[in-house]
Amino acid sequence: MAQQKSLLDRDRYCCSICLDLLGNPGTLACGHSYCLDCIRQHWDNQALQGVYSCPQCRQTFKTRPDVAKTTVLADVMEDLKGTQLQDTPPDHCYAGPEDVGCDVCTGRKMKAIKTCLVCQVSYCEEHLQSHYLVAGLKRHKLVEPAADLQDNICPRHNEVMNIFCRQDRQAICHLCFLDEHRSHDTVSAEAERNERQKELSGYQRATRARVKEVEQDLEVLQQEMDSINRFADEAVRHADEMFVDLIRSVERRRSEVTAETRTEQEAGLKRVRDLRKSLEQELVQMKGSGADLDRLSQTQSHITFLQKYPWNYSIRRSTARPTRDVRTTQRFNNGTVALAEMKDKLALFLEDDSAQLSLAEAPVEVLPSEQLHTRAQLLTYSCELSIDPSTTRLLLTPGDRGVTQRGGTAGGCRSKESLTGRHYWEVKWKGFVTINVGYKDSSWDHQGFGKDSQSWALIIQPNTVQFQHDRIPIRILGPPPSRVGVYLDYSSGTLCFYSISDTMTLLHKVKTTFTKPLYAGLWLDGLWLVELKG
Image (tube, rainbow, N blue to C red; front, side, top):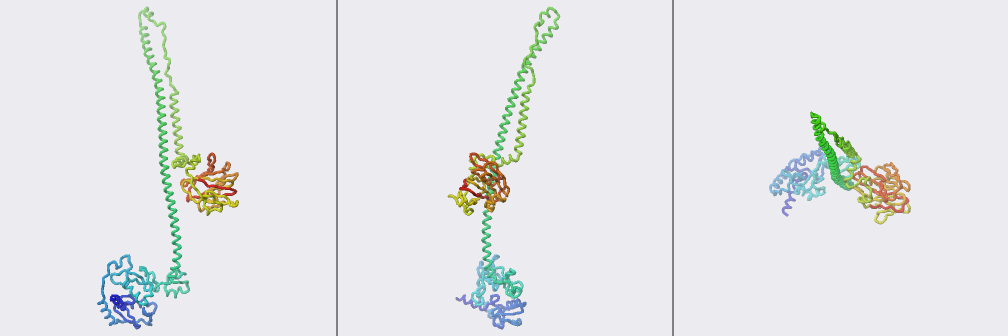
């Protein structure tokens, strides 16, 4: 109680301008006392208006009062300062770099706990007490400590701006309101803030909703990136396997050709060696016979010559003659030519764009449409599709997997599920149907299927079948199918329509780039029942 009484006594001697103990006090004619420096600065600010008033009672003076020091009051203040307890606050009570400091404290400033919007001053706990105890100050607006007080002061009149001009969209003070904004649409700053706060809440909700949408879109894109990376890695792995197999086949064929050539080589050499051996034996014999004949011709005795003369002499000729076998060399030449032709064909195949595309599509375990020859292959990518009830006036079958007409009226529908990745589904019907694949924001009525760049439609009538995209129809030859299979490879931009019966026939293939999730759709006319089946 003594401490509170001391505080009350101390507040009796506070300057209502600086809210600190009166320093070098002076008293006005109305009886109120202020620090001489505080009251002089207050009147300096009023000089431009030509009006001088007491900050407490608002009494005005025609001329600026000449206030002198009140000696008795000054002595009382000196005694009060001498007897006042000077307790040192703990360090955490002082203002740090991130805190709002008390504007009244001198020296090291204390933390401000409130800001007065009327005084445009921030106060610590000690200097704020007068706002709780002085009747005139209790009506002031206190808010959490604010560092941007200067933004609330009119730069022209140095007054608090608490009015908002809607016409000029700017904050003004009461003097601005009486001057150039007199005829404008104005409200209190607090009222405008409350109205704009409601509007801002709507912006915040819309922004949060958009943030959620973008995050979802980014998640879809991330999934697509992961899918692209996964399928690309699979494609590289399968391509490596295919080329390894191709290289093995070439190596195996090279070994076979080498073995066949060496076998042919050995057979040819054996034939030549056998003939050579026979001719060499004949040569030895003929040389011996020739030597005998030479010696006989040199015999001097006629009787001896006649006795040794070979009356039955004949030259024995070998049955094999050394002729070139052109068939052997021709076989070697033919093998070389065949290998050259195979090399050229392989080079052309590897350089051909379509061959490269096939090699790129095959490794990801999805056969190109030209190679999907069986329904079993397609069913490995089957998906469960259901119809979105909000997109149709038709009657749904149990499980939302099919629709029937309501009173014979034509109508359309769209799948609940969005489609990315690889999917396959089938449509079975009787009568007339349009099978559509498109983006969510494309037109989903019969007049819009295939009429823009965002939808691809297969239109089947009792006697004709046509494909349509971006208003361009393509006639498809052949009888209308009774069951259609739809295959989608989103990442590669492939969309195929197949006629499904005992065999599978490709009706039309789309090759493009998809940019948003796709949906399956139908339009029915003259039907009893249509079903989506994975």
